[in-house]
Amino acid sequence: MNNKWNVAQLNIAKMLGKNIDDPVMAEFVAQLDTINALAEESKGFIWRLKSDDGNATSYNPYNDERLIINFSVWQNTEDLKEFVYKSAHTGVMKDRKKWFENFGQPYYVLWHIPAGSIPSLDEAVERLAYLQQNGPSAHAFDFKNIFEPAAVL
Image (cartoon, rainbow, N blue to C red; front, top):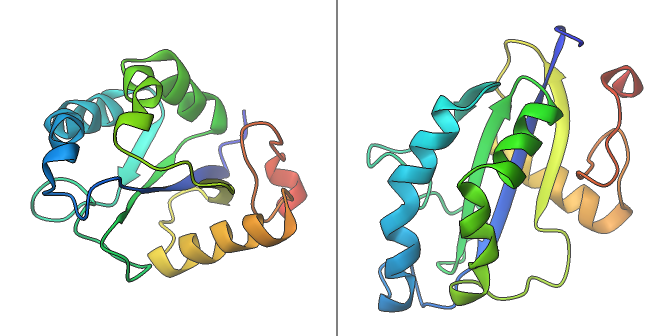
């Protein structure tokens, strides 16, 4: 395991509701604190973007009230993948069509960062745009195409 690198992730979703307070989003919102706490207690979790209300739904880097984000840092891709696909988080993933539109392009991105650093939200947005425009590479990748930290150099 490479302890010189961590992995950052950004994922976005376009809500079916007009904003996070729309009644169609209530069931999703009701799970946010539980799922966020689960992430924070998960192996490999380092950091997540959150406002004073404990989540990232008030951040709007895309200037679209219907887009919400999740932005976090993990020790490695294996720990992040374990949380995403093998924890209670999978229930939220399974039900996402209740709350979110089909995005039609990559909606999440992973990239390696030097251990101990936290990337900016602007960088995260740029990495997702890069993946959407260019496909996976060492600069911006997904779980199907994981690049090793050495490829970043």
